[in-house]
Length: 286
Image (cartoon, rainbow, N blue to C red):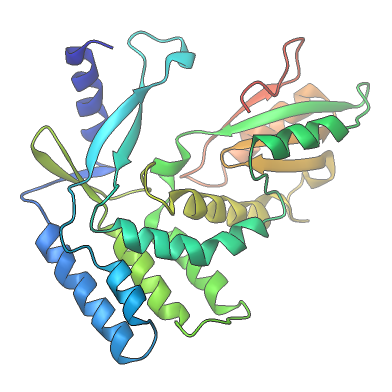
């Protein structure tokens, strides 16, 4: 992608004031003070060790930077960009890693969870369905990382931590404080300007995948895989690899289309696009 086209696409994304806000200066020093306050609190209460405190503190943090990967598979010109924030060595990345270590066991317990491509292929090799009465369908959650609501996602995390069998010295409220700081203070630089992500999380942050998966899991349990869903008896299988969902649908294509329309009325932050079985494999997106 030519430089001018690339920069134009970056600025198009960053001009979305629902997702990003321009900052007047580099917030690193302010965030460093917030982290120091939390770390000192953790040490003084015996919630974290000195080794963990050192891990959570970046003495010479790097500034995270924004870039995009062109979505060439969309067959558009110019191709839209997938926003990424490189946070390696940044001041918030240790908090993200620490929280992800806590959240990963919850992610692996998600009923619809597929870990990776190997999991997907293993599932596909065992699938059986009645081609006369059932449809294979895939759903894609559009721009999942940038669309999950921050406060609602933190509420999901808070609920999980507080109703789990907690076996750590570090209390759930301290983990939530770290997660809140890492998510809501997520900043980056582009073209010598600083921005704050005010909705969603960024691809590039270690715990972004866990947060996104847990938020969608909450939606699935509350709205989809429940008896209150008028279409639930049509769903023979519902499995998800991050933002890609594999379904065996018991019913007609018309009923499946109606279901997708209904699904897109349930949550203002999640929008689904569907691919029903054709002569081309419906699993190519995996």
